[in-house]
Image (cartoon, rainbow, N blue to C red; front, side, top):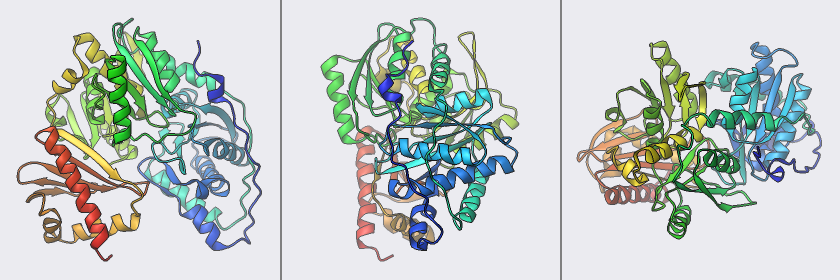
Length: 509
């Protein structure tokens, strides 16, 4: 069974970095280490800030936290994975060196999807870290940290940050290291998980395009889909990193999707973000489906009795199935905490998903006579397979399947390279008074109610929704909208983004 071409998992050469002594300037250290921050999922920052000293510092802090909290014994195993962005091999090598120096046993799992790494780690009782910036540009990167029992939570983040701040005062060795390669073991386990979700030949008759770009899920998608009998066409493979945001699909990407759909007569096109934990599914016309719809389809496929999803997900989810819905802040740590609460409340079939489509399982499920073990981290394969099976089993087009859920028309986009200081000032201004919010949105509509759970989600008098939210881990300002039809949703989105731009240009903050 071929899982990845050898070139995809081959270790790149890297430059050995020197140790930076404590005597170097405080300015340099502050810029390169303490400017990094945890966001909605993991640590992120500019590559120039993360490579070398900073990645060693935070990995060492993670290792010390695992040991101090008794989450791993001395010599315990930590798996290291990475995506295909240009800086990931050097950061992964630095992390491997730091883990070994901290008294743990690093294992190299190469380039693979984040859910594959997390699944393998949980199956052998290991911790893990994934070097990835997900969907953000190649000049940025990040690290996602996992305890042996799953993703770190907000208390773990706080402790790792505190340890890093203390370590920052001392000399940090960031010599790269090497470790045993167990990438194939991890990939085999992930393929096995996804090969028993559907009946044999469940996707036979479907012609599926896989937009491969630079996602680490690209070859696994082809293999898994072909295993279910689909006719698969690989598209758009890239040797350089392409940032694909599945929550705010770019006009350029949509143009590619529509062109391929028409040219090749495809029933569906699938893809994922850089580290393969957020799905992208486009219908037979090349139009992307909303991520929260994909998560909803997965929840219904699994017959969930509880759904946990952030406030940014479609407002129609509550009425879309026979399950209890719990809304959270944006970010996998909050969704995971919500799934844990649902389980404590007696729910036995718990599914979580985000507006980006990343789907988590908070309990075991029986699927096609097999046990699908809980995987409480974002996964792109489950929602993709559930959605394609929904179309194939009903012999409906993907657009018809999507329409059958009768969700409100939703759209989302982001303003990139939007300084965090500006977004913070805008949110402070809007929260300062109802009058400020009303004036800001006056050209769009009258404010009927607001929700301040995460960002500002405003319901207008005509029941349209505008949700403004700064990204939790990137210099981006996001806008989510809902309206009665697609055209109105697109217009409302353009208006919302326009108001944000105008305020940034004209306001004194």
